[in-house]
Amino acid sequence: MPTYKSLTLLLTIGLTTVGAATADVAKSDRKQAAMADIKLTTIKKMYQQDIDDQGMSNPVVLQQYANADLQVAMQLEQAYFDKNQMSCNIDHDVLWNSQDPDYTQDKKFSITEQGFVQVSLAQGSDIYYELSCDGSNKDDTDCQVADVILDQDGKTLRKHLLENCR
Image 1 (cartoon, rainbow, N blue to C red):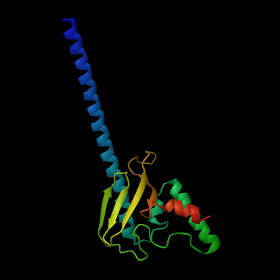
Image 2 (image 1 turned 90 degrees about the horizontal axis):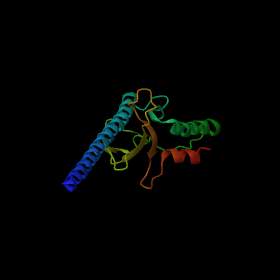
Image 3 (image 1 turned 30 degrees about the vertical axis):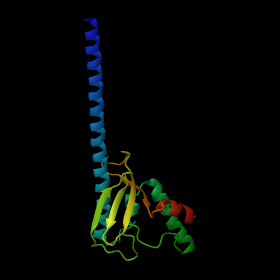
Image 4 (image 1 turned 90 degrees about the vertical axis):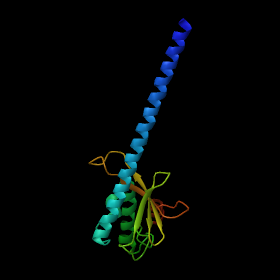
């Protein structure tokens, strides 16, 4: 009989462990889904502000939503322009991948497998945003744009500015 009690005890411990692991996975999935929603909401708000202001926000809307590292890179761009009266930036509006943005075009927002927010524009462009969501923001619900992936090769806005605006 002692063998059965030991086996029953081991089986109970094993099932309890599996149940706890399953609960942890479910909790993690809910947390990831919530974070994805927060990221999407942040980018949607950024685009809506740019649409409402027709790209005339000062500072530019991207800088308002940028984290400290991206803001530093964007400030390098402004300092470069002030000094050289010449731009070191890319030659188009990053949010719209265009020199002459169509603020009325349809947009589709989604999350990639890597956790980036993808904005698919009706004109055929896809823009990818890397967001930082460390909970240090004032309301703990918004994320900040850490970088914008500019092309298929993984070139980023922050890297471009740091390399070209010194």
